[in-house]
Amino acid sequence: MKKGPRVAIQGIKASFHEEAAFKFFGKDIQTIECNSFKQTCESLEKKEADFVVMAIENSIAGSLLPNYTLIREYNFAVVGEVYLPIQLHLMALPGVKFEDVKYATSHPIALRQCVDFFYDYPQIQVIEGSDTAACAKRIKEEQLTDTVAIANTLAAEMYGLNIIERRIESNKKNFTRFLILKLDKTEELKDINKASICFQTGNHVGALSKILNIFAEQQCNLTKIQSMPVLGKRNEYYFYVDMEWSNMENYDKAIRQALKYTANFNIMGEYQKNDKV
Ligand SMILES: O=C(O)C(=O)Cc1ccccc1
Figure 1 (cartoon, rainbow, N blue to C red):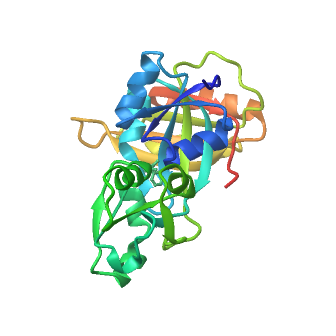
Figure 2: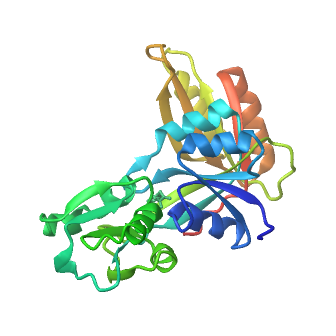
């Protein structure tokens, strides 16, 4: 049995979440397959997993908004990030030819990235599945000869499918950003130069710009800002901000100042920037 960390992912082995986990931790991990993002959080909460790897943004499909809420509500610590280029292949049971194909199944994010391909083949019906690898596995298990899956090479190998068309994604530079989550912020991480924070501001002129200026004045570079309505409160938002810096003192100062002008300020995690694609 494998020994490494137990990593919960939404999906099954050979999904993009597992590929992201391999990229961050190396191959020596125990993958914990979950049916939903919520289930990955439950698994971390119950200490059945040491980490969760969770997609947060895709360059084509955009932010995965419910995941921001999950991370905040479970109060998990963001301890790292990993970017994965998403390369998508069309795969089928050995012997199946492209002319035989009636259905194509995959995860909605993957399907959205292949719209140009399917535009050229309107006779193929597109069907959403829970994750790319699970779609590949179903073809194998149910011996479906009229169906293809859109997934990665790992899934083709693991579930014994042939790739009949390579790289069918519309945008070859498409990537997904995943966050690495832990139960709490106990350990001292090394070489910290990035943070994910969350706060609310008042609903008055200049409230948000006041905070953004504080970060600008302290040379903290914002790499992402995402707002989400506060449930049941009109005109109130959570702002999720990612930022990078080269001088830790600047960052500390910015945080101390921002605290004075925000409500429910929460540092979701401080970690090492990792934007290699
Ligand atoms: O379905 C998968 O394999 C996933 O891990 C979800 C996903 C799908 C496409 C891009 C990134 C993540």
